[in-house]
Length: 141
Image (cartoon, rainbow, N blue to C red; front, side, top):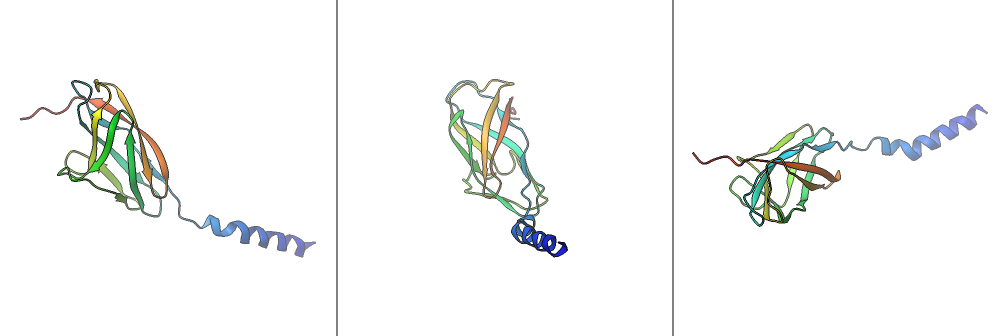
C-alpha cells in the first residue's frame, strides 16, 4: 500500500508541481487622479502608480478610460508610448513629469470629485480596473 501512495504522490507532483514554479503575477494599479475640465469634449491628463510585487516583469500594453473617445499613454513630452514595462519590485509613477495618460475628447464635463473608471491591460496580469479621481488642474505660474 505504501508504494501505491508513493506513485499517487509522484503523479500529483508531476501533474501540478511544474505549475507551482511559475512566476507570480502581482501587478496592481493605485487609484489615481485626473485634471477636471470646464466642459465636455475637452482633453485632460491622468496620473497613477503601478506596482509590480511579482517576480517577473510585466508590460502595460493598453488602457481605456471609457469617459473619453481615446485614452493614450504618453511620455513627459507628450510623445505616444506603445508600451510601458514594469520590472519586478518596481513602482512606476505616471506623473506630469514623466509618462502619463491623456484622455482625448471627454464625453462629459469632468467635475471636481467625480470618478472616471479605467481599464489597464497588462501582457501577463491581464485587465485590471482602476479609477481616476477628478482634481483641479494646477494653475500656471
